[in-house]
Length: 207
Image (tube, rainbow, N blue to C red; front, side, top):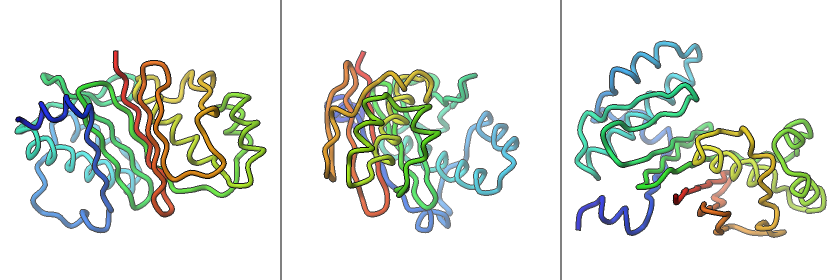
């Protein structure tokens, strides 16, 4: 069975990386022309490093797992990157020292966030459904980061980013205390895992 057939059976593959571990790898493949041109527009050295590293890791996975060499990536006007000439979808997220990458036969969104202890009211009002805000205010354990990460992954899978995710109420799936969540919201399979100081979320959109 090929890796792509395995992927079709499991719907998606995810990969977690620690920047300090992979930053010095010398065997990572080069990026595409479109990626290198975009990299030149990045002003922050930190953003540039994370972009180059995460996309090099993507190319390495595509080459090793799917035998796709010199993958052609295109950045859309929405800011979303897509793989041309292949049925695969991918999503990349990074937070401080962590990189999280997902590949799927379906549209996929992934997100990693370092846990934030306090709930920023301005962000909550902008991104969260009123039921979600009510849930967060009543919980002794702060779930802001978990909910924010779920919204990020959901928006990436839809291809809209955080636009219009406010009206999607995910509070009904949250629990007072949890380490892992898995549920369906309409046509999306959504999973969340807490690991140390970080939260990892995945959303796979089955059309």
